[in-house]
Image 1 (tube, one colour):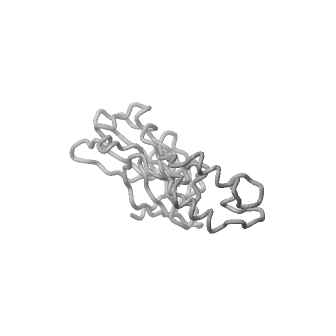
Image 2 (cartoon, rainbow, N blue to C red; image 1 turned 90 degrees about the horizontal axis):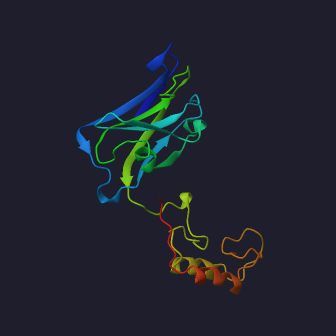
Image 3 (cartoon, rainbow, N blue to C red; image 1 turned 120 degrees about the vertical axis):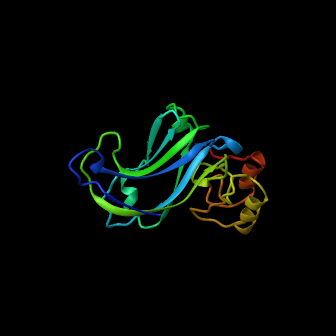
Length: 197
């Protein structure tokens, strides 16, 4: 979905841009143990830096805005994954069992200030249960990025057996060599799993 923004107006809604989705009946985002809202977006270097945000509104009119941590992110010309814990909305009073509207916008919705222009693209908006998101955390001995310490990690270690030098991913004890001491780390954490959130 292309989302153009022009936040150069004189006041109020002319200083932030957003799109919204309203459901005819409230949606229960706790079904299937929903824990996170995830969306992908694509920016462009020519874009003005603006605050990207997502807001949820429940059927009682409670609204919570969650801002992306980096306003410059809309200037990055690649697909980026943004994961938002649903507790950020529920802790502010939004009833996740009765979501009526979702907003995606750019600018400052709460205190509009004059801004710039640009276009981003938004795709793959989903609510997920806890799942493997390596960028949000994984066990220290997880070399494969599947968020669990298992045979995939041993396979990586076997492929690097007796390699030496700085920066070896399988060098878990930090001695610049992949050896038996490194195998102790996965053994101590065998089948440890870290899902987010």
